[in-house]
Length: 199
Image (cartoon, rainbow, N blue to C red; front, top):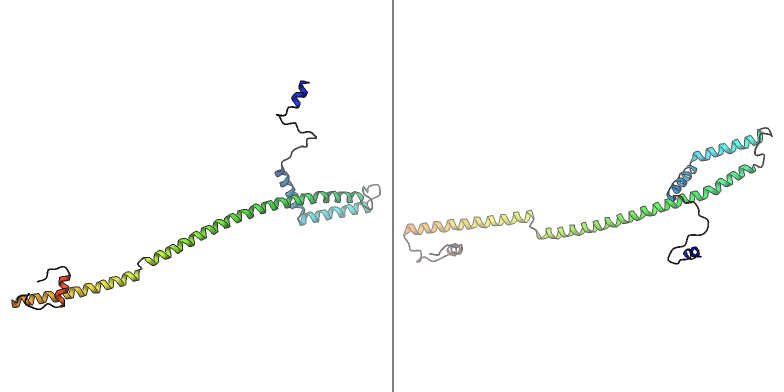
């Protein structure tokens, strides 16, 4: 009675009933089925099977009657070929299913890589666009050359004006004229604008 109560406890899982089938590794079985399907899908298999069937026919038709094991109508050969076909079809289907699974995994991996490459390409395109915009605001070599040439011209003009003004002042000093008495001109104002004191 106590054993029966222990067996009927609800807090413990029940033992599975029925016949226990032997367990096998589906991966090993799948590899084995792929090997068989791969072998059956070759020209060698067709040639060897044709040779075996031809030898079977020849032996069971040309050999003495007491040595023939499958006389005409070849019932045993028909049974063997039916048995081979009945096993070959599921093995080929299993191999095709495994190949379909591999193809699906490869497709998902290709899709993931394509998504990553698209994201990388979009990122690089944005970076190139940003660089182009930034390059539009950066001084180029030609722009710098033109600005330096313009500044050099301005410096030449300023140095020429300064030399003219210094010559005039020297001429005035030689004549002994008072600089305040002479009228001012454009050179005097430019020179005063350069930061030197006016006379």
